[in-house]
Image (tube, rainbow, N blue to C red; front, side):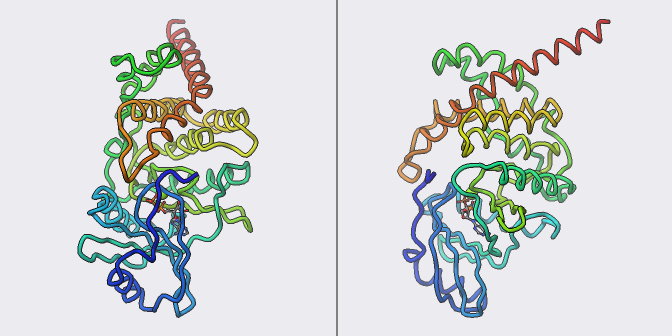
Length: 320
Ligand SMILES: Nc1ncnc2c1ncn2[C@@H]1O[C@H](COP(=O)(O)OP(=O)(O)O)[C@@H](O)[C@H]1O
Ligand SMILES: [Mg+2]
C-alpha cells in the first residue's frame, strides 16, 4: 500500500544527485524509483558505473523538516550498529542546501504487500537477532521513541471514537498504564517494525530490517510485539482471521508486557487518527491510521481478556 506519495529521483536537484555520485565514488548509470515507506522524498535503487547497486533516500527540509532530521538521525544510528545486526550499511551521507541524502547497501528481496508465514518467520528471526544485541550506549531509552501511548486514556477522556472504543478504551488504558517503566531495557530495539521496513530474501528465508531512525534501548520483545501488531494492521495473505491468529501466536511466546505493547500501539493509531489531520505531503495518513486501529480490534480485545485473566490469576495465587 502506498500511503505517502514519494517524489521521483529524477526531480531531485541535479547538484544533489551529482554530490551523491561523488560521495559514492562512481557515476550513476541507472535508477529505479521505490514507492514504499512513509516519507515524501525520493527513495531509489541506483545502479553505479562500478557495477554496484545501492539504496538512496533523500528529502529537502523545505518539503518536510521532520524527515530531513530523521535521515540524519538514521545516518549516525547505522554507524553505531554492530555488523551482526541485520541492517543495511551506511555508504554516504550528503547534505546540500536544504537537502539531505543517505546512501546504504542494497538489501535485495522484497517484502510484498502483505505478510506471509514465510516473511513473518524471517522477520521474527531478524528481530531476535537484533534484540540479542545490547543497544549501543549512544541510543536513547525507547520511552523517548514511543509516541501517543496515552492514546486509550485520551480516547476515554475525549469520548472519541464509536461504540467499540467506548467499550474498550477503559480496560485498554489500564493495560497500557506505566508503559515508560515496562518498556525499559538495554536491548537494541528497531522500534519501527512494519512490513515496508523489511526486506525478505526468498532464496534463504532471511530478512534485513530497514529504516533505523527510531532505534533505541528497551525491552528485548518490543520489535516482536510490533511485528505482531503489524501482521494484523498491514494484513496477511490468508486474511484478517489468520493475521490475528499469527499475531496472537507471536505474543503468546513473549512476556505479558508484549501484549500490553500491542494494545498501546493500537491506542496510538486510534488517537492519532482521531486528532492528527492529513497534510498536503501526507494526504492519506489519517485513513491509514484509522484502518490499522480498526483491523487491530479483535486482537486487542483478545489480549485484554488474556491479560485480565492472567492478572486475576496472579492476584488469586498471591492471596492464596
Ligand atoms: N537498503 C535498502 N535496500 C533495498 N530497499 C530498501 C532499502 N532501504 C529501504 N528500502 C525500500 O525503500 C522504502 C523506503 O525506505 P525507508 O528507509 O523505509 O524510508 P522511509 O523513511 O521513507 O520510510 C522501504 O519501504 C523499502 O521498500
Ligand atoms: Mg520506512
